[in-house]
Length: 179
Length: 395
Image (cartoon, rainbow over all chains, first blue to last red; front, top):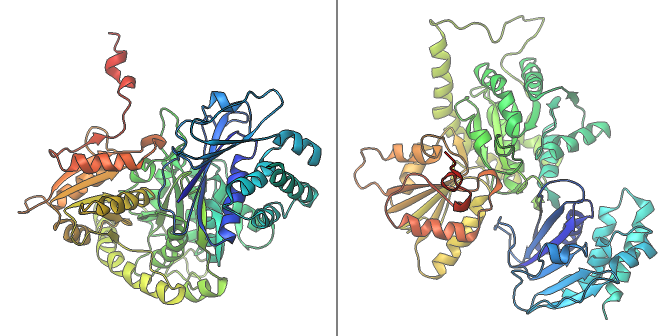
């Protein structure tokens, strides 16, 4: 079983990120369980979404404390939420960063910095970093194919054709942003 | 067809398949997505149903009471304070023998206000005459709703059904669930045809005064239906469901590796999954631990619970509710089964996960260790002792 922990502020699409990733892994025959944890349940408040996936049904219902992957959608949370704590050895951290985001070193983990808000502004016109990071996750982790993510984004945005194409492009740009 | 769905959406799809003629609800988290989904189906013309917007949960429950009294299949969903506000009507629904279906998205009760999960809300309604099922996952919620209608609406039963699902953990969690086809459901669940209803051509009265010469018999009748007819009907309906849908999910109780278990844990709802994972780990170390999952809590399947637990030497009851001033309600009921019995297992009670406190694998491992020790009736797990009264006492 693999575990992903997503850090964001409420309204930045953490649940959507977990949902798309869960859907994409479901297409590949995996069992997945995606779930949010709300704190204050207010726009802008720090919150988490989680994802477990495995070859067999997921039964464990607790929160995730020792993730294999973290995805940080809001760069300002890296320090305040102590995102590297509890990471498994050799875990991978995918961070949305801005130009002024300090260089962070995960102790025993590999850190991938993605200028996700900048890419999103160019492609979508709004700083929604999450779909960019989904593309980056596919490349960094190798756990899920880019095509599956794109298909899941299509399913998710089927009622919003005006933003679908831009988000698909954001996923591709995120994927290719990882060297 | 298998889909990756949020629990609330899975519920909305299951309810749509049951074709209720009236849906009434008042929004409350974490239930809200359920009736949002149903309202969307009605607005899109995918479900022909009267969706009644009301000003409170008391009215929502009253609306479905009225619908059922007129012979119309109905649905409502709520949580926490909403369920408690409904409670006056819920006793009436059971007393009037109306098979309403209610999904309770389990959430803690105020005060302090808390939107997160525990079982205190539905447990507070355990004495109301409603049938109660507790689901571990999305599939069980979907299957229990379809089977719940069939059981409640059986002319010999005519009692309301509450399907309990853990708030957030299941309502907002997304996982793979098999949503049956309309053809399958139509084959399984016939249109609602009650043996009595309000009808101007055949006038009758419902919910009248029951004075001391008749009231007690109405209570006895509900008790008799629950303890004799419902307990017998559940396995029959479950077999019929299995023949059409290919799986058996609704049970009185579910056992997991209890055959040779020295320690058996007892629990309800989604935490059963976490416990199963811990049991596999313990078994890999050669420790004989098992789980008894209570699926049907009302009526309480005493015989099944007794027969499974009697073979263990230690039993640990883990529950997300407490009868303040006494012990956990499930612990009390299970202890009572063994009252006066020789060779009773040592039974200990544990309160966990109140108000959304996370129940981790460590929590369960600690319970297993404590169960092996001295008998205790009511241990609160994972308390933060720094927050307890002793440290704040100012007088």
